[in-house]
Every structure is written in structure tokens, then in C-alpha cells.
Image 1: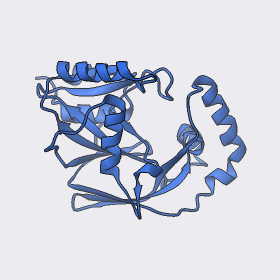
Image 2: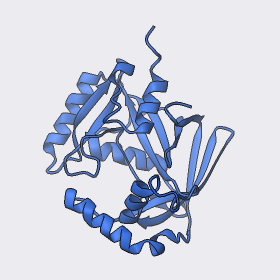
Image 3: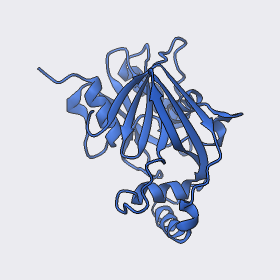
Image 4: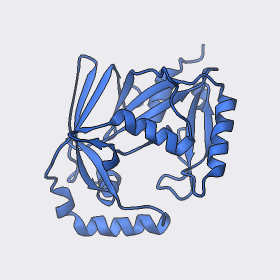
Length: 241
């Protein structure tokens, strides 16, 4: 357990797309609509598309299995933002499950992206990631491996090395299931940051404002990094002696 998150090493993650009758959107339709209007007033570029949330999961023998269902992004954001403040709406079955590549550099650093001003989490420092969406559905399964690689490419322009590591680290807490895939790139932090800067400079509306390099626990930013990021970094970097 680190920073309130349970950390589990995994060899495999499988997900399937299911139909799930979630009463929450029907019971809170007016509140969801009002909350969404407040959110887009602050960040007009936000889009109320379809996202996938988890309604069931299990972990055994270093493998995770989860069921994902479709809902609107506006519903998800209202549920996420209010579930801790209002215990009546909390549902232990529902979790924000997502996959992310953790870019490790050849000189032992981890790279995080700073979310851009037009995003819902402007200024926060994340691993390149996003909540799964219908593009990740392949028949009856949800491709979390592909989702993580797609988010990395879209946000940073980086493609995975040919022999990328395949193990996962699951961080479970705060209503989240963060499936992190640490991958070591054959380049230094400085070189990767420069490549990503070129990618961001070529985009009309980049999702990231820039990159943040972490080389140890002293670089963990409690104000700007969400809990799962802080927990992973605290576990990955040993305490200073």
C-alpha cells in the first residue's frame, strides 16, 4: 500500500465490453447536466463523448480481468467529482479503469506530461493516458494495450520500442484502477523531451503543455500529481539514504 493505493504487479490484463444497467444517469440527470455546464464554462473544449467505465474486476495469479460498459463523459465526470462528497451516490462496483504507458528513459528518469490549458485537468502532471472509449472495443473485448499505446502516440508522438516490456502495475484506490505499463525507451530524458516538444509544436491544439522529468522522490509534486501517479513514483524510486 502506497499513498492509499494498493499496488499489484501483473503479467496480464484482459477486459471485455459488457452491457450494464447503471441507474445513476437516470436518477441524477438534472444534476449531471448542471455539472457539465459548469465544467464546459471553465474548459469550452471539452466534449461529452462516450467513455467506458468498469463495473466488475478481479485479480488472481498475477492476472487482472475486468468488465467495461459505456456511459457519457458528462455522467462520468459528475460521478467522479461528487462520489466522495456524497456517500449516497458511491457505488463500489463502478471504477475509472484506464491504461497508461510509463515512459522510463535510458538514464533512469520517468516522463510525465503537463496537461494543457484547454483540458479538464489543466496544469496536472500525468502519464499519457485517457479513459477507454469505443475506439478501444474490438468485438467482445476492450484493447487496453492498444489504448495505452494510442494515448502515448497521440499526446507525445512516441511509438513503443520494438521490444517493449509487457508487465503491468495495477494501482487501485480513489475509485480508480490504473493499469500502468512501464516501458524503458533507449533514449535519454533530454532527447525524449526534445522529440516530444517537436511533436507538440507541430500540433494545432496539443493536449500537453510540456513534459516533466522525475528522477527521484524529491521530484514528486503533491499539488500537481494525482494520487496514483504519486503512489507509483514513491514505489518506483527508493528513499534517499
